[in-house]
Image (cartoon, rainbow, N blue to C red):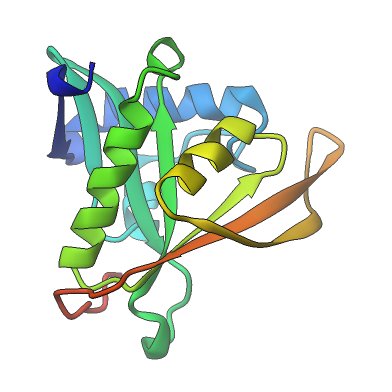
Length: 172
């Protein structure tokens, strides 16, 4: 399937499809602590302008990935948190691996040296995906957030870049 998937940058015009996939993730209860899809303006303000990717099959967006800063402090400008979502119909078909691989490459071109992921510990598929592409588990946060009256742990993973090629700039 990977040879039929295109990975391209996404923009505001893609938000209706991107936000629909995000809503699917919210509805699983183990993808994010968000309970509603934010407006484009709110989402856009919280995510780095570069490294916003969509996976397209034919003319349909089937997944997306983006980065958000981990801190506003200048020293952490090359560190970002990964978000990746695949529509349910196309999970377990290699879309996530292709999309995350492209995100890693794009982030290195943009000068990021560390990518982080905080994943619900119950989300074994996402943890396995990240590990398959070189993320290593660095710990977990016990009962870090409560969703629908249930406490959840997050598994923390990171991937260090060997040689970032660019110099990151303030992205927010």
